[in-house]
Image 1 (spheres, rainbow, N blue to C red):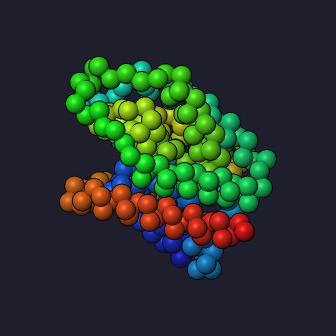
Image 2: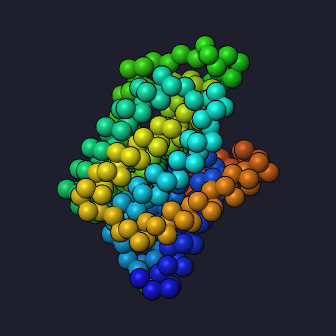
Length: 258
């Protein structure tokens, strides 16, 4: 792997992870299409959808460790929620990650395109906030939480994502979890999801390890910078940026598929 390939992958990982840190998402929803299309367009490298999903799975695993560690003592981690959704998404993501080796390149892109469209729609659905409820009194539908996490896990495992871009709107809009608890707990759930996806991808030989290592380094540098930038940016502006990013990449993917 030559210098230009390394620089390109690092730059893409940095940009994707910066927005990931700024917008509070796992980053794969951005990194997947960037890594799939930009190196090929520049003529420096070409990764298959299987390799891209494997690289992003490794990146998400390392990117979420720091977030979970940071929230461990804040009282925002809902252990029951993490238990029900975490176990379900771990199983689902392993099935998706392991089973993706039997899918054609186009099929993986279709899954990404569907997930991206769902994510954009859910971002703009009205959400009833429960911020006034004391955190110790928060309740949720356990069966529904487990079922939805399992479905998210299968799709996220196929594309190598942690699923945070779907988990957050589900937890806020469907399960009615307070925002602060959602942000903290979704990181822990995403971490568990990334374990299943990573095991599935590694065990089926879908990972390009050197490229994955470059992405991990870029993410460890860029994510904290993005989180700092978020404190100085209007939340509605952040939501609009994320929606445009996801919608734009979804359109690109569907144009390629069709």
